[in-house]
Amino acid sequence: MVDIEHTSLVAKATAIVEGSHLSAADKKLLLGRIPFVADMMLQMFVQVCQEDPFGADAVVKSLKKKLDAQGNLKKIHEIVKQERREVDELLAAG
Amino acid sequence: MSKTEKIFLPEAEFSSPEHAVVENVEMVSVAGVKDESSALSENIQPEVEALTREITMQMDVSKSGESAPAVSYEMNGVRVDVPLLRNEVLQLSAQEQGLLRDTTVDAITLNALAGDRDAAPLARKQAQVATLGTAFFGVGAESSHETESVATPSEGSAQGQVEAVNSQHTLGFTDWVARRGKKGIAILAAVIGMGAMSPAFAGGREDRYQEAAARTAVGVLAGVLGTRVETPYRIKRGVGPIQDRAVYGLERVNIEHQGREQEITLRERVQIRAAQERYGRAQDAFDVKFEMYQLAHQRASVEEFIATKEGARLYERMRSAELTLSRQTEHISQSADDARERLDGRYREAQQRIENETSREVQGVYRGAEGRNDEVIGQGAGDITRAVVRGIFGR
Image (cartoon, rainbow over all chains, first blue to last red; front, side, top):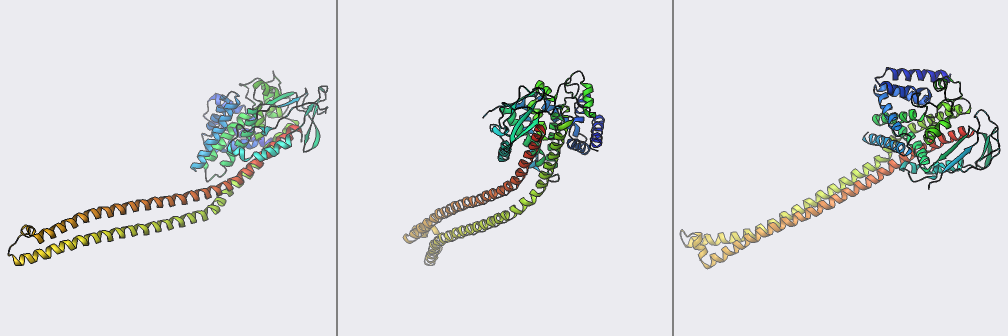
C-alpha cells in the first residue's frame, strides 16, 4: 500500500518535472532525487507545482543554492537562515 | 563551546544485528553549542537540553567484535544493546552541531511560519519551496550524474534504480557521507525527517526509521499548523482590550489637549482685549478732549490741538498706549504660542507613551501566542530527533 502510494507520487512528481520547461540539467537534478524524497515532501512538491507553474523552478533554485555551497556547512547554514529570514519578511508583510 | 562528537562504530553490515561489548566512545551533546544560536533556537533551548540529556549516551565499541558488532548506550538510566548500522566514524564539529540544531528548527519553522495559508500565502509558498529545496538537497542521493557512489544493498524499487546506476560502486551511506564530507548535512536531512530517504537507508530498520521520522514530521507539521491557525484568534482576543484602552487613552489625551488649547486661546484673547481697552481709553480721552477743543475753537485741526499742552499730553498718552498695545499683543501672542508648544509637546509625549505601552502589551500578546507555537515547534523538533535517535540506535 505504502509502496503504491510512493510509486504514484514519484510518477506524478516525475511527470511534473518532465513536463516542465526546466533545462535538461535541472530536470536531472530533480529526477535523480525524486525516488528518494519522503512521501510528504513529494506531496508538497506536487501541490506546489500544481498551484504554481513556476514551482519547480523555485524548488530547483533553492536546491541549487544549497548545492552551490559545495558541502560547506557554514554556507549552507547561512542559506537556511536567509531562507528563514525571507519567510519571516514575507510573513511580516502579510 | 566547541566539543566534538565522536561515535566510533566497528566494521559491520546493518544486516548483522549481533551485539558486542562496549568500550570507549566519546559523545557530546548536540545541544552543546550556543555560538550560532538564533532567537528561535534559544526558545527551544530547554527542549534541546532535555533531548540532550536523553541522548547523552556512554557508547563503547568492541574492537574485537568486528564480526559481531553492537553498541551499548544508556538512555534514561537504562543500558541498552543495539545493533550497529555499519562501520563509520561520525565527528560532529561545533559548526555541524549548530547546523544540525538550527536547521532542524529552521525547516520546521519555515512550515510553521507559513502555516496560515490565507494570512500569508506568499510566505507559505516560500517556506514550502525552501523546505522542498532542503528535502531534495537532503536526500543526498545525488543523482547519477553527480556522484558515482550512492548504492545500497537494498532491492527496493527506487533504491534498485540507484543501485543499477551506481552498480560499479556499492558504498554505503556513511561511506558516501564521509567521502562527500557531508555527514552533517545527511544527518540534518535525516533529522528533518524528509531527507531521510537516502538509498543507504533502504530496507530493514532504516526504513522504519525513515518512516518514523517522516510520520513524526507530518505530525509536527499538523500540530504546528493547527497552532498557527489558532494563533490569530488568540492574538485578536488578547489585543482587543489593549487596543480599546489605547483608543480611550488617546481620546482622553486629545480632549484634554483641546481643552488646554482653548484655555490658552481664551486667555490670549482676554489679555489682548484688555490691552486694546487700555489703548481705547487713551484714544477716547484724546477724541473727547479734541471735540471739546473744536467746540471752543472753530475749525481747529488735530495738529493745532496737539500743539496745546493738554492736546500734547493726551496725544503722547495715546501714542504710548498704542506702543504698549503693540508690545503687549506681541508678548501675549508669543506667550500663547509658547504655551501651545509646551502643550503640544506634552500631548505628543502622552500619545507616545500610550503607543509605547500599547505596543509593549501587544507584543506581549504576540509573544505569548508565538510562544505557544515555539513550544509546539520545540516539542516537534524533539519528537523528530527522538524518532531519528530511535531509528539510528534501534530504540
